[in-house]
Image 1 (cartoon, rainbow, N blue to C red):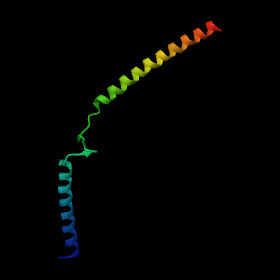
Image 2: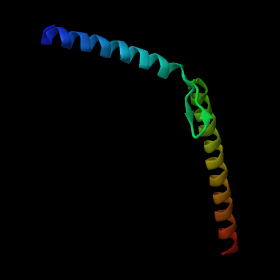
Image 3: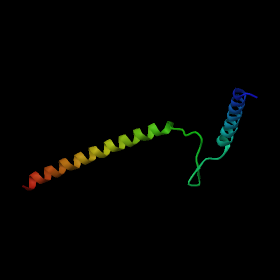
Image 4: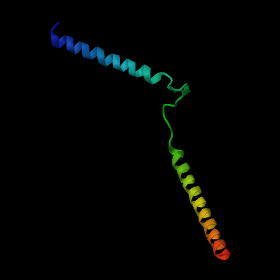
Length: 79
């Protein structure tokens, strides 16, 4: 066998081994610190949660502003 034939055979064996290792790696359970991790993570609800958090933050900011205004009014009355 020539060097080119050996190289081609080695490449084919490498590709086949990579495919085999890729399949077994994809089939095994993935764990992080012993906790199973899903293969696909659904991020559909994340946008809604961020929107809800933003609305809650807006309400909090509004309440803080109204409390500050009341405190300023009381300070003006007392001085």
